[in-house]
Length: 193
Image 1: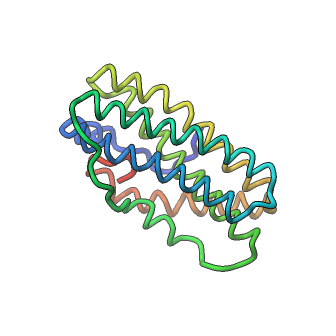
Image 2: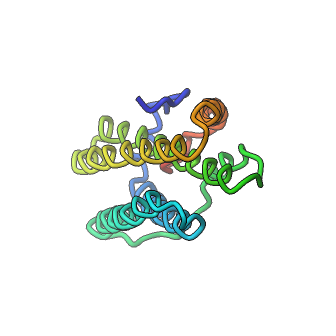
Image 3: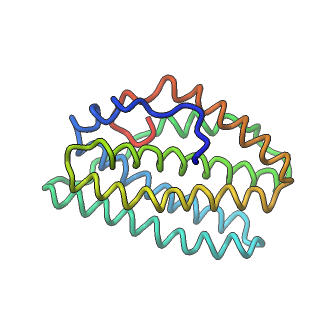
């Protein structure tokens, strides 16, 4: 369904289970960054009314997810740790060349967002199925559905605003590139890494 070319090794969950506090902190910041991405799209492309409407709704949803994760951290007697760099996103954002028309820039940003959401969804599915902590497993099961909807929304907007054949070609190329990135990741208790 997600089109990912390289699935996450299920043993990644074993790494996560050794440090739940770390994954929750990383996850909280992923939700915060997703909120920021939606705001940035509104600011950068205000003339796309459909996009602005959806991003406004997404800001509310993503910040509510941040709160849900933060609440999980507090329930466990922890505090939100510091943000850390996301090696996955840093590597991913190197794929498309900088510049181009506004439409090209928008399509590239939407494709990046779609892929980040797809990978998050895949990781949440794995956590929902493999975590021994049943409360967290159920928590990730619920979030997985939202991430799938976000992935399809971003990909749909890219196809709506760009040339469909060109967008689909770029999407496949980005998926191939992402699979190469993933070969070196999955060894840390982070949502993407």
